[in-house]
Image (tube, rainbow, N blue to C red; front, side, top):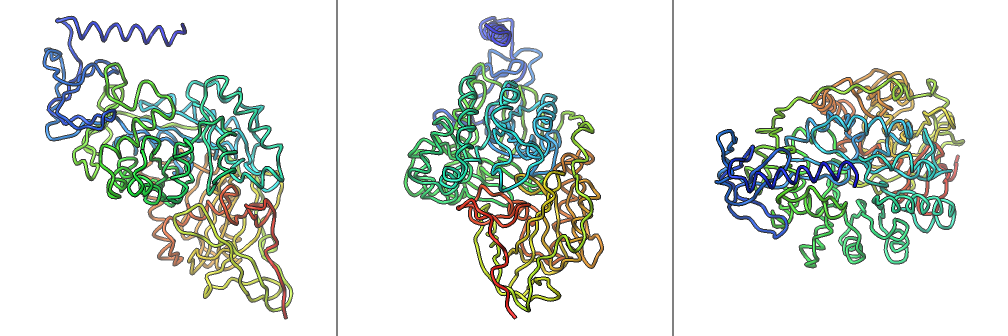
Length: 606
């Protein structure tokens, strides 16, 4: 037996002593509440007794109340297991683990499973290990699932570091690493099989190793059905999740095939309402339906909440409140094989959310391992600010760009061009073609058609390439927006109404060594430096970042006329080559389904 097992047995004995020795008592009793039993899907009156980090008893706890027991009156409230976010990225919030937790804990989230493949794409093993190191200092529980491949599409994009099966032993043997994260490298099943079969072999080597040490594997199966879905499930070792399910039909097929469907409800990708129809309309069992945030901006965390808000939205779709809570507690615990959380029964960790308003998921208080951590939406424990080492900073290795680097060229007076079609609130994109004017050899943006230049500039100091195409549907009226957050390889992405402002925006991001920049008429309208890998910041608190991003959203709308909400997040997903249909990388315009690079300019006229 290992040391952990021995310590656990000692704790169990202490709990037994308290239960059976008339002279020993609970540390805390939550008294008079309505208990949410996620095992039986019931609500009934019950007290909850806590000793140390553990649940001691659920029921009548009168005999466990001693002279030093702290009794919390929760009459009229609901006692629930703390919520679990089973799939998310701290980098998408642009916050460190600490600052995200500072905003998340008061909303009832007590356990997070994060996928650090964003920082992995930029900084490799070092970046991910630094994030894990930070998580060890926190009172909430933060686990990780790590990428087994970066970049996701070798030959079609350039990452800062390359990761494959050779790095798995170094990453997977950390106790906070549950297993392999979303296997995006085999999301495009047929094109990968036909054009890059070696990726499948390396993937299976990683998965085989993970399974041999009892680690999990998470899937990524957008729009996969039939044989392609079956191949993806098998590639992950037969027990996988998918957080890219966007239709009722996908949900039905994946549930029937044993996939844990992570119903995503983030800031810019919201798929739960469509997925949940498999349960509300088809009566399917919900035990493998799990709610996740995936990507959420700090502004939404501050204003709406975290998993509590997603549960609230799910209830609004017609799901029973207890069933919705199961989707962020016991269902998640079952998927990952958690033995100590997800339910409130004797001996489990006392991670608890006390809910004031069940339908609106208003959280009154939160307990982490038996200690009250938040009350009335405020954190009441100390989380010291965490500073990252210099080794994960100054990650932008690109010299300033010039106009000639960014323009899309064509001869004649008109050009027939391809463009990515943005789909609001989705990772998926469409494809389109347009006729645009050409002036002085440069293809011009067209605000009337909402067709703007979209570029990705490699910033890791490896390829030096710039990919160029057009974007339809971004609804930008003035200026340009650039950022170093561009999934998954996180090169610099820029879109603008004119090339001059695009140059200024890119150079501002380079000067900040990563971040977001809004430019109009050659001046900086607003910016946000992201010093950690060009993805996150340890120079501001979560609240300060939230305020700053909210201001940038306002400026994007009012100063630049952008009609898309959370525009930076929408922009960042336009380079995600594992999600259909067209995307852009430093290599150019990518047809995701055919695994090919397409020319942007189809025909020149005049």
